[in-house]
Length: 495
Image (cartoon, rainbow, N blue to C red; front, top):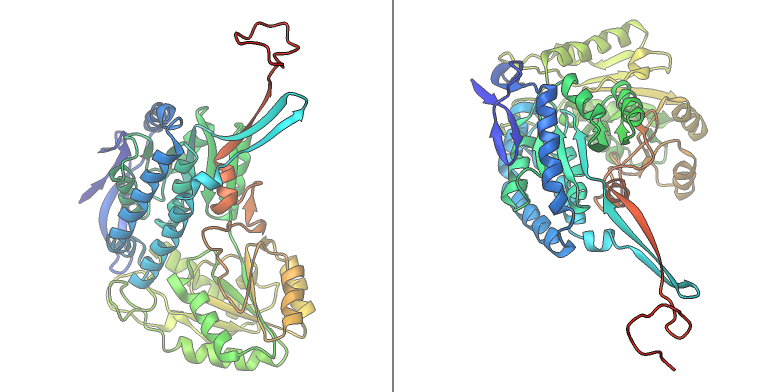
């Protein structure tokens, strides 16, 4: 059985707590590894190691840090197939999804390569007579990220590049369900030439999380996960004096107006709802079908979904893989049952799909005539279940989205520019797509939702991410005039 420990001081080290958790291949159901769960003492060692390395690294020139970041970018690109293979082996998503995840991570490294511009300060000469004021951005010290199972490569790459660009040490606590890809990325950081011990990885559970949240030498925490845990991370981290950005769950709506290109909208809904088995915080969970678009959308989505190839992610023919665990498979399947009992029309029932072997597979489900009081609408399912809610107008759809607890991402499909602008301006969500189903911003913008989808003040990656991992220092300087100063400055008085 493969043993996965931690990375501390640039080396892989075995766990010492004696506690482990199984890592599984979701496509077969077979256990492939055991991952160590860190103790408080191991977290302390990792933080101390990062703190020691950061002291010198934080004063390294921007030119040198930039060269290291370019090295990292090129090494990640050269190893993208290996990263993707590790993703598919432990998460289950198909190889094309895994490669797409790495590509989005590369965008963030490329943004961090522009650190000389992103970290540029400001200077005001002669703000008052003889007084100059300068603002520079300084590193925080040691920062940490607690990242989820559903994007085990991309979300570490949302955080690591900007944090290192800003001059910080870094602790990564990845999901214990699929740790091999983030462990490999940490190895590539060291291969790129960053100092040993600057970035350390501790695998673990709540013990490790709480140790990071409470550690006096951890200045900031980044988190992506469910809303209840995001609230806990934010409350605990800020109570311990830390900066926190905590991204929570979502219930993303896609509004389809009667004038939309139904074929394009249906293609988008299928990709956005069932891609990566629906285990994405930006997945479309609800199609809000306005007026006469409803019947056409249900028919078009059903027709396309029935043709999806579901299988082992390593098979090039597969378009959707399994869920991450058997517990997730059973939990998601239970929502189809509850939706049917509550009165929804089950157009496609993923429970009826049959699969060879013992993997954690579930077919795609489509539920029509869903209402806002049903659990299938109210809860974050995080699986391949798409609900259709029928409304009479765009205003009714906007009101529905506003009342929903989450506000992560949303989309509208229409040919009407006025309707699109109204939606863009009025919808209660942090990320909006117009004829784009999954509006994840490119790496030089920033990612973050509203309401119960985000807790904090500074969103993730891009310009906001660089600000999160640095803090301003303002220096006010007075230079006495030699002609009037009584202080001997050591040079002749100017006439």
